[in-house]
Image (cartoon, rainbow over the protein chains, first blue to last red):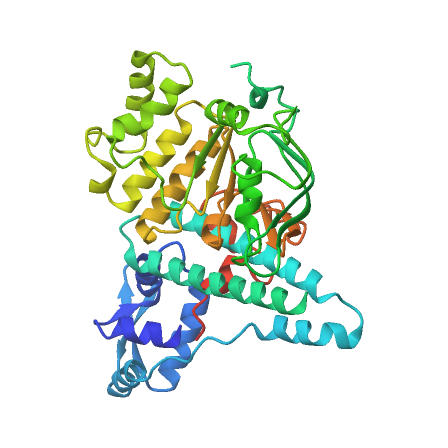
Length: 168
Length: 271
């Protein structure tokens, strides 16, 4: 969330709650919404590391609200973030280890593990379909996020199929 | 209808016992279906998934009488059908089993309207009733205004919707779908999926073969087929691997709550 907040602040100063709302609007219902406390904590840390600067703004009859703006160092951090490519997703490591170690341990049947895992993926796929159906049609970013998650799951399911073919 | 497949609600739409089919071609015989037991109850939406060559299409063809089993028993709507000859299967399919295929299989020199009306007429509907059913279904499937088009003038997604209308025009108790989105783009796939879900919600019993997990997850039961056998038979949304999270209610909040795993995890953008 650190860099997402910094990137949002590249547009101009904002306070914590605004940033939370902006994130929600941009990413839609599909994105597990950050709680506002988490955002304030992150903003505090970013300020300490000099990437943003906070300023208290007085409000009549209410506590001050703190508005943040990006520093030069913060802008550089965002720039570097965009320049970096992201890491590849990893093969399901924990499940892979279970599959590899099931016969060694003699405590689990690999095919039963695969079937159980497939059920979980299919249920998640189903939840994602429901999420997609419930999401605002015009929110392209949110739909792309859901579709990406579905394609990853599809790949995981294909891989389970390969495991089953090989191990059966 | 007093047909086999529209019997009392507690009678399974499909019941198979020890169903087997071996293909004899060049080379070694292929045991496509090896002793399958299966029951499909009214209103179920069952997806059959598995690698290509696992025999899932053969299973579907056996259920629809498009191929004959070498062994085993098969009941459709309580009626024993495994010894039926082609003529009786044709009648049964016309009345009780709709089929959609990957490549649509529309009659290319008939209009969209005629493709849909033909099975109704063959089943004994009056021309007027056939027209009415056709009009209703085409409207429902978003194909109004395409009645006079020839299949070749339509997109793949539209052709599959016509095929769906044709399959459903006689209100069959069972809809069989063999890779219904297998030759469609992602928009066409979503469209077919949406329509199948809609008919399912109205009570249509569906058995669908698919390699696409997104399609399969629209079903409420997923059968994993490997090497001619059922490897797993899972009921979605009420799974015992996820206690306390039925996962059946729609809406943004529900899916995210799972224990470890589930929607929140696959969507989480890690920092």
